[in-house]
Length: 480
Image (cartoon, rainbow, N blue to C red; front, side, top):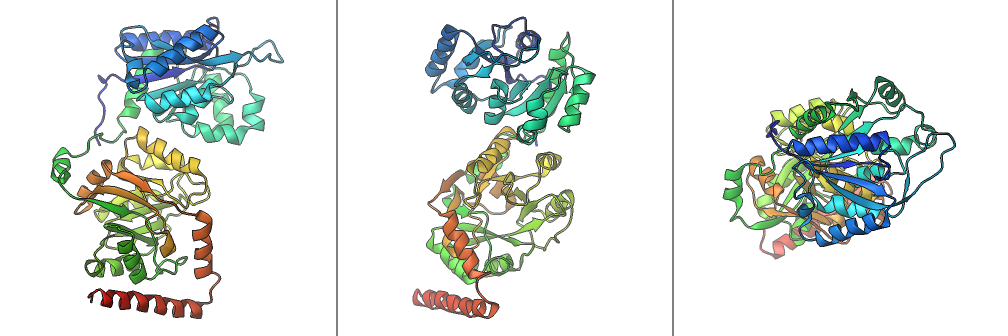
């Protein structure tokens, strides 16, 4: 892990939920002061805001179109005291029921926000009052950068704090730091949305305070390049396809024999596989013992169920790790064995997963994150994992999570051949995720038929037949 120095200059987008023409708005006035000061201090700064002006919106969209293919051009010249203001869409004011006017309702801004944040490489997206629906909330949804949320108003928000609380809370979970303008605002936010809110007033000195927050967060990012000497060593290695997540009949919910797994992996053109049975490594050790004969490299792994903080995979381990330890204890044991900490399906609410705060606690020890798993039913969960990995610069992986042989290789990484955990992690940095056609319903139905729907005696008989077929086929090829 390489920390960023305080002298580093960042690329930052400040996002307002209010039309930028509303300069009497205190939040906009604060953003204007802070962004100008950050720009004067050498940071490259964009301000994203809705607008009442069709002309301003057209001009901004013209700039975005002209920057396609060279998106960093939008940041050019924004580090000399003048940030670039991007009008991301027209808005229609929504009359409030009291004297206080609410944020403007964005019209067709989500697509613009998604395009901009998906192409311009930013260190930070700093959202102000990111309640839904708003430009700030859209930015938080689509950000692939470190996110800072600033809360200014001490007034109650019935929609966000009561009616849509769980929805809003799910997005606030993506914030890597939270600030509040006053103690009253901090108390209100802590009451409705638990978290740590640092007091940063809207007056003088705010830019410097934010700069320190940015530097602290940036220091937690992983090295961008990794080990250059290892990268040079790997440069001429052959490319192989690797499936990093699968199970054998040593898992309680899988009926695939080790022999069938290896034969299928070879047939699918996989050069290496990680066998990651639930709370067990006997299947992985058996696979490794047969790997040379099968012609497939095997990484010994285990998908470990922690006490109450989800699952984590240990790769390149030699000893079984007991289930029921805390997340931190499990990670420490993987590291003790010289293994690789690989977090599977981290944001899939339909699996047992660590929450955002728990992930941040082990961030320094996470070596890789699974960002594509075909058994994840909701694609946005995979997308969220990819966003988390991107902003912390964590190497990304993929695997089939296969519980039946028919699913093996449906997700894989194309990467340089490797020897040992260090070369593996370095090779993963440059790996390419390759996905195939796979029906979740089909493989889940097969899993059910092969396990729960089949009596134990029938499962044993089926296993014997499948292993016999594999051995007969291997004998026909001249294998052992």
